[in-house]
Length: 290
Image (tube, rainbow, N blue to C red):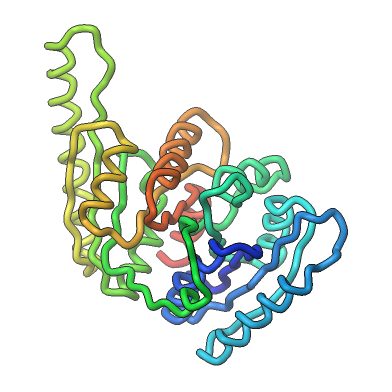
């Protein structure tokens, strides 16, 4: 599934944060890592230190028997990354997040639409944090995944990826449905609507949990009342989740904008990596791997 993984690299301490995750995935899926140095310069004038950094990282990964290719791009990072992904059939984009200069899923989706692309690769966004050079060799586990679901096709786009990662890592999976209180003027009506919505959500999430278990995956489910973003982040932090997997839409529309907004807001408020999967990309993968 992750045959080719692109890692967007800049000269910053936060860059190190994504390396342990892509190394882990590459080892499990026998992936080819594409280490892509990013320069905002309009001309291909490479910073020597960036080139040395990328080549040094490639060398250390080669020693671990991981397949690596290196490259460098200049100009608008989002545009160039989308072009590179299409040309090289990239299955996953990994980058760090947390500053205004970061590449994130909504930017990539927007650029992809402008370029007339229907599908882009999923994006693994690892929150940037203070890093030391030694952090690149950190060992990580993906033993517990959180999958927020809102009864939509968009949120269910994650299933092929959740299944693949869970089976490779023997991960446990928690499916979370957040029952967001509706805005209603009458308290009684509010209570009735919440109870009805909770019943629907509970049946839905139990059904999806049963499917996961039928695939041999250790799974449980939760339905929690509350605001979506705050509830997802609090649950992930409280239960020591290693990865949050969420769906987003690679094409326009109100539904895609709303759910994409939740995904981005979760990323902004957590230090846990988020894997964002577009609906169209997941449908294509389901046909190949299903």
